[in-house]
Amino acid sequence: MEWTEPGAFEVAPGVYRIPLPLPNDGLHTVNVYAIDDGDGLVLIDSGWALDAAETALESALGTLGHGFEDIRRFLVTHVHRDHYTMAVALRRRFGTKIALGAGEQPSLAKVIARARVGQIRNLTTWGAPHLADKWRAVVASTGEDELRDFEEPDEWLDETDLALEKRVLRVLPTPGHTRGHVVFVDADSSLLFAGDHVLPHITPSIGFEPARPALPLGDYLDSLRLVRDYPDLRLLPAHGPVTESSHARVDELLAHHEDRLTATLEAVRAGTGTAFETARNLGWTRRNRKFAELDLFNQVLATGETAAHLDVLAHRGLLTTDEREGVTIYSIR
Image (cartoon, rainbow, N blue to C red; front, side, top):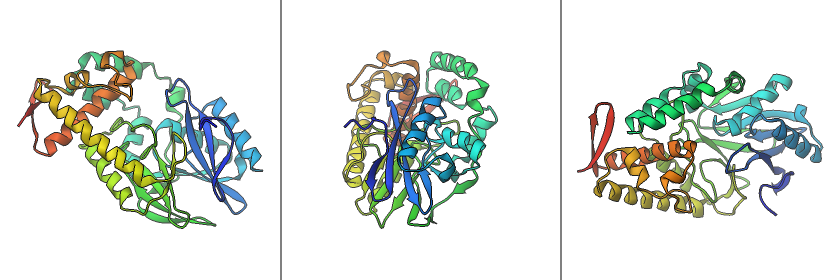
């Protein structure tokens, strides 16, 4: 069975994976996890606030003998809309509590305040002013209804042990994909609710957020090593099928980024200077697609991710940086 098929699938005693549809998204589906907890449910992530996703979630909960009113709490791994906004929509109707990683406060504040120009400034710094202009038009066309999908949570989560009725979840901050991303570790059941931090088939985007930190890839690599220090856990990802070894996938992701760092360094050695120029000289996705073949959104992601790799190389002392008319130029040390 494809992991995107709708329904509620038991992945551990009392834990159910519920795939929900995404719009115009290469990922197609996001996994929400429903945890049986006494006479109600706790949900890890919530899905995108879409009619189709709401219908699918209601149907899946119905097969478990529950409805929306039985959701006691949403524990959200990060603030991206495919994880967060359904929780906001259902809270407005049912009063369900929402918890989110404390590190998401700066980005969420910018979204709520409609201060969404950070990525535009970054694109200029990365040597892609034409992408900045196109992205400015995308931001300007975003409807107010979409922006109203975001509100503050009821609770900000730091690293702690979260006691539910039937289990204890360790809240583990894992910045990288976003600065406030968290995962939830159920040590007694050997489960890792990984959000987008560890995905079985793809690598998550790095640093695409309104309040981008100084070294998002460095944060991500540190967070991968943190998860690797835990015992090997069953991997319950937000996108993709459940797999049996968090260690195996973390090792693959660490190796992938070291390979990517090497390729990025070689591109600069061959003569690229800006993040945009470097991104154009690298292959993208598992199909090794050319940069020019990507759509606007993925070109923006690719440029930002290349900048994240270049900044790690500079942090390691392998590159130098120079600011020229507001553009960062990278050179071999």
